[in-house]
Length: 128
Length: 509
Image (cartoon, each protein chain N blue to C red):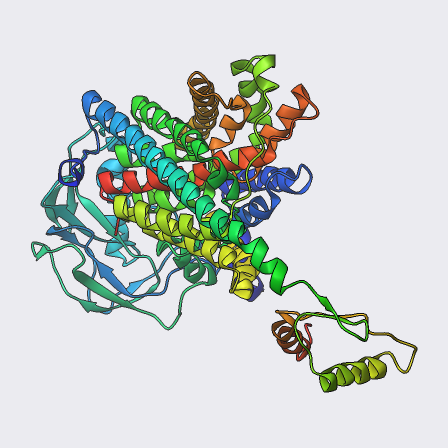
């Protein structure tokens, strides 16, 4: 297509202009229509891909993620050794400056370290 | 006393012209619209201020540095007015000079210009350095009323044709090297002479390179991509067709510009793209196909984008019934991050394979969007959304404004472009609305035709107009997210049309 249309004249005839407009508009319509079909297919595939693991997930998650109440009444995700619980209790005691406290539940935070790193980077310099 | 008098003559007052004063008024109107009416102020303020600077007798602002004088075409040098070591002095206010003799339509005007320059050459005060007769003659959109002019240069009679190229000095300095003389053959881009000066060129000469080298529009697209959520489009891909339909306005305006008979096909294409309502794309295409029309095209595109809430509603109401305006559309599904990432990659590969000429626009638009959606480049995405796009907007706006000199802007062509621009917007809006109505004939899930008007880009203003008009018909109807689909489809569509124009007209680099 390009070799014929690349020689478009500065003053084209009426017919050349009409074919230029018709081809151009159809080109845009066809390209975006194709893109629309492709997007619909991608959407259908992605929806199916996401639904399948989700259908399997709830059972597994309910088994592994459900916090288990321990003998001392603290809910934890999995088995946490006694000395770690003692360490957490000490840390909260220091942070709360000795105010009365009771640990009820211990849960992991996946993005904590990344957030702390980002906070440190941003607080390392002052924005003028 | 004599020194005071000389100092007085050195001030800018003596360089003032009526066209400058008229352009001050134009700049004042644009500033008024931007500041007090809040019409697209982020762009109109830099453009208007740039226009004001362009129409003051400034120094060290826009002047290019001295350098090589190159041949614009392959052909034969028929007149050389310069000698080695001759001084070249540019006037205080530099006017745009014709590149072809025939750009001056009347023989008397062309003759007067040539005779004036040849008379000045005798006292070394000319800025016309060479006349080159091209091997391949260019055609004019409007033919001049002459084909040849007979003049005498250095006592030698010369016949100058309307298709001959004029090569002007663009900076003050001295001729350090002279490579050609009358009768020599040259090829396009060959060095004719070298002008030397200690001065390095003005501030805006360098900033404007961002437009000439086509750096600013793709960088703006990077920011636009980082700001755009393609989710509504992915959730309802049918709306891509609305964005496609709105591009009909571009082609209809091209036809209108050609029918006027004062523009050639490249200029008509650059004017037509105003209908896409996409400022950076308009600038990108105008710079590529018709750089001489860049200023009026950019001003028309941005002014009409600002006027979208005024231009579109009457057309939308005229083309839809009350019942159609009340159509409530089905809620959009949630789009996953994976889908958005795949969409960005598919669009960039697909569109660039189809129209490589649009690669800078499409590539950076989707790069910006990928940065936004991938979730691991938050800082880059924020930089593109804020600092980068803001800085480029200041430079782009002022660089466009600085091209709005009186002699370029106060022309019949400018009025024609402004007229065609509004027609382009109107037709684009109508096409989008009518396409939505057409799609409703075959679809179970009805589309509210009001979102069709958002197929003109103007993100997100056109979508907001759809929302406002929808709520006027039914206060509980929320069309904004639905309208964002055709709105962003319009951005892709306009970039595709620009790529098509550049491919056909040979404007790609």
